[in-house]
Image 1 (cartoon, rainbow, N blue to C red):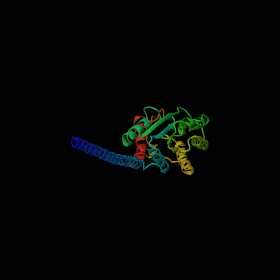
Image 2: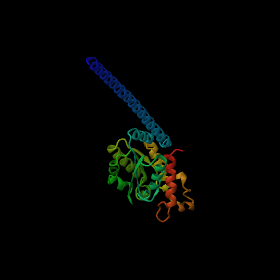
Image 3: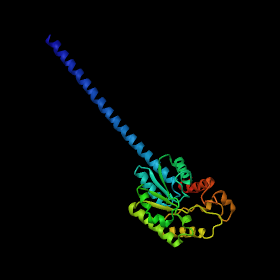
Image 4: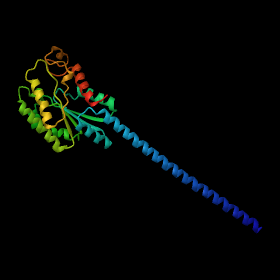
Length: 261
């Protein structure tokens, strides 16, 4: 009887040992599998993020170098690229070229890659804008990029070009003091038909940008010649503002710089 009980206990102990060992190795194998799976998933995520970064930077390669660097910084920080668009009534918050450019960027980069804020200042001159310290509005948006259409048309005949350029520099300096990493990209307003002094002022704006190291996007090459009546299809001669066709043309010209094919 004692032998029987001993054998029974020994058998139970062996079974317990085998079961415990099996469970131990099963858990160990599962832990190894989970660790390997996590490593693969982390690697895949890193590869995906690297791939997405490369795609975005490839799309942005036709922008000025400073703008590309700002975009890269935002992407590496895993956040939207904050783009502020500011200008006169030629740069409307709704229904104009900024809205069309936003759609083009969403289509090319993916919705939400760019976070775009538009600041429209109806009737302001550069002197007004400087005095009202409008750059403080942009700084609150913590921009990576500021696409600025200075108020040249509103300044025309009211503010001298030398004063205009001085005000633009003052506005940019104010922004940079509050948002030092922001990259300001200058662009001209739309052309107008048969103007005399205005085209020269735009040329001086471009020279000023080059002299001071500000990136400059010149979209005038995309418009009909400013001495041609064809321009009136794209810019309303009564208001000097872009028509629907003009807004589309302007947005398309900028999109070609923001979106490399």
